[in-house]
Image (cartoon, rainbow, N blue to C red; front, side, top):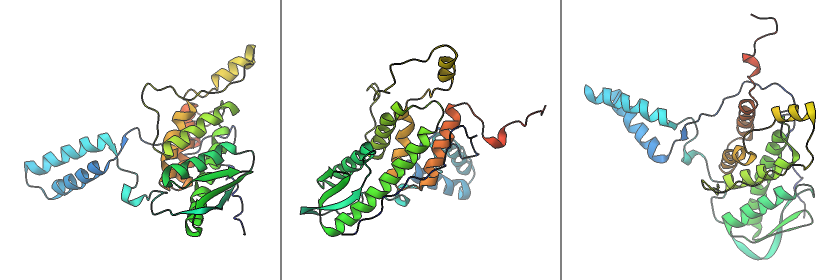
Length: 265
């Protein structure tokens, strides 16, 4: 059986020490719910066609609503769930996707996501992901696995290039992507996954430099919202741009277009 080629990560999205580019920084507002969007349409109609005080009241309510919710993203009906549709189980396992041996954490995330969302049993063996599915379902699962794997690889490469991020942060970042994608974010008060650091601590100036450039927000928290967007097929370029904007904020850097030229007053 011909197998789909292993997708390579997209490189060069955030090279180490590169100045941040101008990107759209995500708002701190809450994502608009279906109820908020329905209210927005009603208030917009009243603000446009209302009479007297009704029009003024609608305009004031619109301002307050837009101050609470972010309406810039696509509506839920416009962002299809990656796992929507029917998935049929079969007696025999069929090949779904291939992984390299070094990305065991990504492979496990794909396997767990498929099993959790579709209830199709899977097995990961020697870099191969197999699923007890009909041929049509196996092909669909292959597309899903490819989408998740490419997204994880790309964001992992980009995250690893951020100054202050260590190899030990990878597992927490992957867990954040997975939990965000599966809507399983840890509850308030629940401990976040550990950030595995080397027991050796640099001394003197080397220690001071490392501390100053360290990432001060937990990798799990950084990854959560990115994972949600993977689930709803937001273009990978947009997700990568959001991660870059987050990195700029965390490192205290300004976009290149806003930096003062050397020698300027």
